[in-house]
Image 1 (cartoon, rainbow, N blue to C red):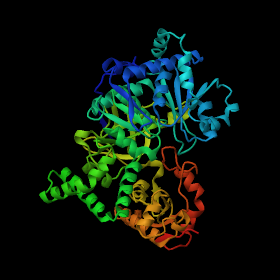
Image 2 (cartoon, rainbow, N blue to C red):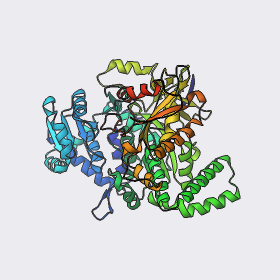
Image 3 (tube, one colour):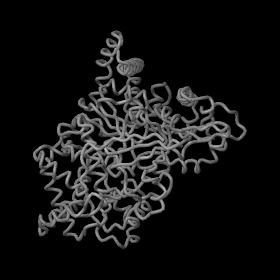
Image 4 (cartoon, helix red, strand yellow):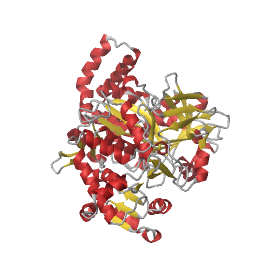
Length: 607
């Protein structure tokens, strides 16, 4: 059993809670901007650390005046915006606990989060959010308070707390110790009913302090980031807390259609995203170049950029490659860099593998993508690449204060400051997920001689073909999904004679690709799923992925579904991970058809 331990860089403080991170930040840089709010003219208006603290205290007083007691659970259903973190810290200052609810959650999911957690209040953002909650309101009798952000209820709360003293807020914010519950975050439910993860104050405090100490080039008072992924997920939630600790200026943009102009005006120094975002930026840039008759130039520029990055890793860049890179950097790469705001030097990527090609491409673009690894149960990051020695294709060494070991069956197990305190109201699940004090992640991986972790698959997703070959779906799915017209890929073949795949088309990119290939850009997804040119493009992506694995692991057939898989259809989680078990059940007939006496090569045409 291989194990790698990284000692903490910052001494643990069992008495500290998450509010201390804000108090310490204000003491260090009271007049430095901690947030920036969008203005009506497309600009940004800064909020200093001391101004944020004042707003937090005012809102906390309003919550206390409304009857919120220490330990109370409050649900929050809200898109990514400044008010999210304001509510987060105000809840802690009032001595209460936040229970995030995805803004896309259905009424039944809202009901589960509120009832299982025992919430006594909820804050929704929009009338539409409130309407979904209102459908199940009668089934949550313990709920005393309901507020709606778009109705101005936060301002009303802040105004109502005038009789609550500063001393009472100070008393309440100091009630929680490190081992106490800071938040309940429910898993996305890929394998069953969501479970409430008990994240403690020490999880936030110790992980934030050690992460900042490990990557000070990224997280410091001179850095800034634009958050656009949902704060209800632990990934963005942890970064928001880390940013307060590190003095990072944070902006928010929940509307991805406005992301490019927001990047241009905000000019972040680092980004937080999932690999699909980086794939989209690359694919959109390529298709835009194709539409302008410059597709070949773009692809050549990409090839040169990747070759340049690989040469850097090898320790020597030939003169000819240097000259080519300088040319294409000026003609092509600089434009993409400008679209990201022009200042972004780093990005933190998680939730899925980025892929070697994109890692090298963005590195030559001037954007070092630091891949990390973690789960809700690990308060997000177990490990992350470090700027001084990052390895493309790996998710870095454990963060200080964390340990990683690889079990005999290849499973990654974790111990340290990041690991949660168990599942809420579910002792059986908690017991099942720990072994000798180590959290069993369910992921398969390897550790190299430097302690760098590489994720190779998901334990429960390993396919064993009828011939006994073990196949990790992600090794095939991730490179295929990078194709611009492909939305999702689900590799199947457990106990089957060969490996197959379900494929969906990217409805956003499809029209552009069709137009660039002299096809009808208004073609429906249903018709495109049967079109020979589309099928040939998918086959090319499949062939490229197959070239990286053995014959026994390669995809022999694929079936193109006539609609994309979405969160609304029940096939994706809020962070856009596939619900594999649900998909296998819902498309069981389609899967069986691929194996029903059909040839073992080629395409399965949709009926």
